[in-house]
Length: 221
Ligand code: GRF
Image (cartoon, rainbow, N blue to C red; front, side, top):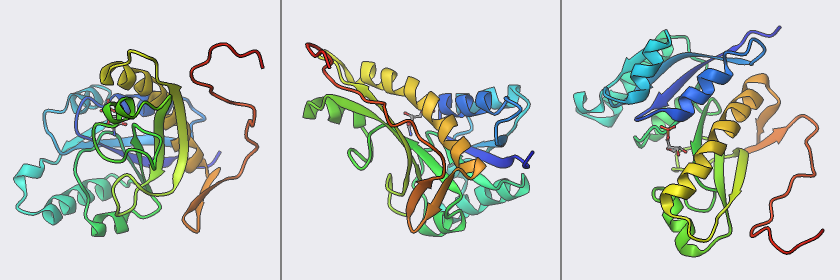
């Protein structure tokens, strides 16, 4: 069996996506292992959870550093110290400098709660509801210098239902995030998803039959 890719996860808060990655990586045939979790917020609930699981859990408090570069240097040292080969951002709420992004170019991925390129940035669920879109979702993508941009690895979609609030839509999407992030990381770690000329190629047969119609009423075909 191929050696598993050593992955470090960056979080800032509750860490439910990180937990989904850790749980998935418990399978012996999963192509990646989560070797450390780092948070810029020492009190992040996800950091305590990771520690309880016996995973190296590092607080790198951005407030303890005079500059963004100094903070990133410390974060980089943690990742290097753990022999991390790939970084998965999971609710990591710090903007990254182009220098840090360049160091991990092609080796750093992120999950975002919208169907990118729609709704980069914050308040994605409220913006989707305000626009009246019928389908929303989440995206796993490579990290590039521009925020919430970068080659798309995987997306998942859910219906937006009349009466949805930002919270109810966020819940529905979050469940799907927990499904697609482990899948996307596996695709990348196994080499099935390859970054070539700023696009992601999937070197595998894909099921072409999936579809989501929203609102799914009144149709028979
Ligand atoms: C998720 O919705 C993720 O897509 C976004 O921030 C949220 C983090 O949630 N980037 P969690 O910390 O993984 O629970």
